[in-house]
Image (cartoon, rainbow, N blue to C red; front, side):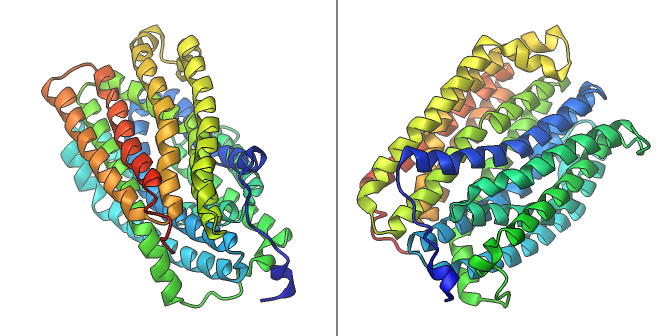
Length: 452
């Protein structure tokens, strides 16, 4: 190991300043893709209610594959954070290169599934066959950006795991600006660009991911991060590290995939209730995506800091760290809760769908905003479990929560045919079930002697 790498100290403290120093840049990095999604929906809303409704279906479908990368990202992040806590800088570059290798293989598989299998699934599950053709055409284009997204997520694991999350903002800001530009020009055919309508949002997302990825890797090069962490020193196949990453990540990948598949199931049931209910539910998803960014940032902070502190051999500080992170997470969620309940029309009016749409959505927004507060507690404890290295515990928790969630929404929406506000109450069941075993596990002390 060279002199430059020996001088780096990536160990964290449990101060509020360090927590916010990691969490706030992550918030900015997470919030930009959500801004992109909302921007897509706003521009697509200009094409009519049908386009806004179908954006919900295609968006949730793409999320299934996006969270595969997110699960790999979380597993890799925990490993990199542990090596950072142990101050084993030489091991970080190898973990990163093998993470890239795995992500590209998974991206190719995701593209093949979309091109070969997705049309059959959508034809089976959706009632309107014309809408199926629109969704299939959109997804065939959108999935081409999956390799870019996965490599982008591996970059997140690296920068967060090594406590350099401030650099995330640069790439995501580039992505946001390019996405808005291409949404406007390609959906509506402005400034000499072709008018692609619904498909324009797919091309826009791919282009924005490319520019964001290019800029952040340029930043990594120019700031010497690549050299300090030996990122590009050895790209040879490393069986030991690949196995380690997969063992750590596969339960998280399954966990996230099951979560989004259940959400897709939920949206299919909503589609049976009509176009307006589907469009309302799409705006609710945006609430979780956009306003939940603060919560997910603190969750990622819990993952990386818990793993880092354990790597420093300081297990006695872990629960105190989690509670401190949780207080920040709940505080931000409560601010969002107040805003959405005091000014629901302000938020809903941005979709331009009129008073009937807004009045029907307000009862749902009350349910969703309260679920955000519960989520702000649950995801911190769940990601703390990830940081301990016991990703199988996360999978067990997710299976239990998803089972209860799917049973509830099927009975309420399909069998009893109740209004969608009762369907969205499923979020209370889901997040409560996530919290209980995660909280128990962290207080049990079973994680103290686990090595990764």
